[in-house]
Length: 214
Length: 203
Image 1 (cartoon, helix red, strand yellow):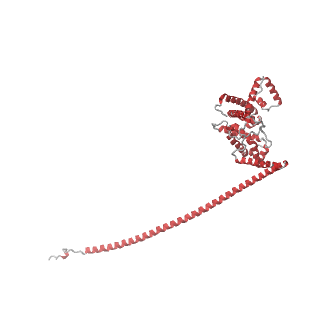
Image 2 (cartoon, rainbow over the protein chains, first blue to last red):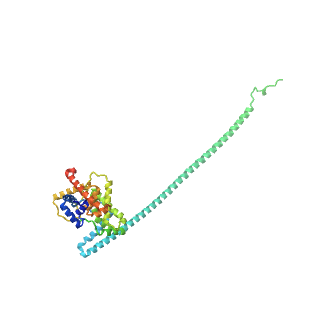
Image 3 (tube, chains in turn brown, green):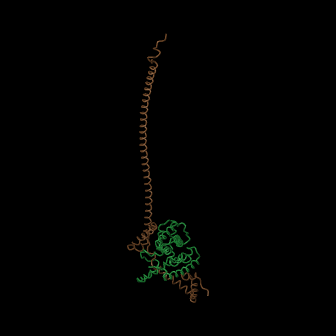
């Protein structure tokens, strides 16, 4: 007996085969214990798998914590629908569609307005930043110029001090040199006097006082 | 029933693509966020990471809206993004000790919005169902990735094999045979857990 393959049995198990195939497989299972057992085994497993289908497995929370933009959009769409549904009791059934549409349009307009407002806010923030940067630049430039002027004055003062000290030193040097020259002149004159005195010196027993022999 | 196709998806995507319509994006998110998060939770076994991955999926949908093929189906494109993100996550992931299945933690008890209303079970029945669900999640995260993607998309999200094949870039026959193999392996994992393979498991 030729047994149908697993592929055929899977189509059968999940109801994806046509009527003719189903009848053929039914007929085979009726006479084939081996295939009937296999089919029963698979059915047993799928029945057990259904236990996980019937209890919540992460299916409870519709809105989580992250992806704020997408979730916000979904929430906003739901809110718009909710507004429409909330007014169900006060409007006639024929108006509900119109109300929902109106809510959707309002939400769209509100979203556009929010986006435009956000854009404006960004532009203003950028402008404010640019202005603040300009102010900082001006302040920095002013501080730099002030510091430069202070430095300039300090340098000039220092230079003037150096110049004054230099002049004083020169005058002192000049006076010193004059005094040295004066003292040197005096020294020369004194020495000359000493030399002249030395040249005119005659001791008492010198030949000049002796009587020449007769 | 499980939602696999919405007539408005492609129109919304067209509006998003050509008019940057925020309302259209909100519409798509509202419709698909829960299924995508659910897929990611089952794929990576972590509800918090699944939330991040779901958000990343929609961020990519928005970022790549101009590359969406208008001739194709939005959901297929979106599922492909989500599944690829899950594959990337699993590839680079260092196994966390608190895994594999914290994805029922911290939930607010909300019920799925895609199933038929059923009668309230008794507390013991409810507890048994929760416990069974934990076994299933444990087995699912242990299932090799190539089978897990097919099982999650077919069984839990109700996609047809042809669409799953398109999402994963494999032949339809391969998607079906992976499904059969995945169910066989899941059966083994569930039996193994029952025999005491999952030590210390307290749902």
